[in-house]
Length: 265
Image 1 (spheres, rainbow, N blue to C red):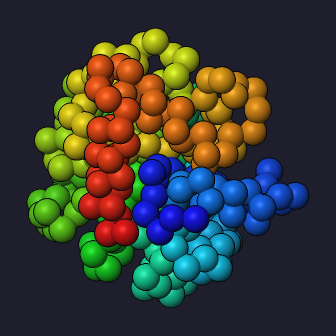
Image 2 (cartoon, one colour):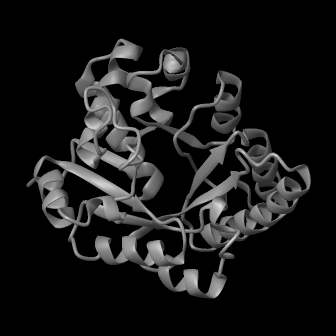
């Protein structure tokens, strides 16, 4: 086991029940193969889980705590309870937070949820700035809304507000908008099988890219249809290298540097 990683999966969910049968074995195997992971909470309960998990390991396992926008129907962002978690040094960011009204057809319901999601997103931005940590953004067909909220917050907080757009599948123009605001974007295994993102990956500067799995979801080629896991982040890194026409070692080192810079690892 090396104390310096070759890969970092910046967005995983190893706390999910998909890993209940082999979680510890999988984490140790991942660390032994010089791959670090950041597990991401989606509500208060799972945020506590990812922090507890991170605290079991001296290095290589970190936590992001926050409230996923689709959780607002059953839970609101509890600033007092989340602050108890955020202060821990193993917590490297706030999230995943953002806007998601995907598949909600009723316009009245959509507007109601948008308002609630925006309120909780702004609360999480404020907490992140207060504790000098980045945000991990979840956006689903909502990049315009996200950017509007970020601009409102940037006027208040300035460069203290920073973060990453997770599972980025927007347009080149949308990527440019995040980059112009100083935000990184992260790619998943989707880029190993969906050709429509090739030009996007080529466009984003290497020093603004992060790699992730979003496991247990969207396993990359050649593991399609299987449970995804942090080790498979190497397939994402390899594909980025191929699309950019760069040596894979160069890309590996750059993405490690990017993750360490973004999350103060």
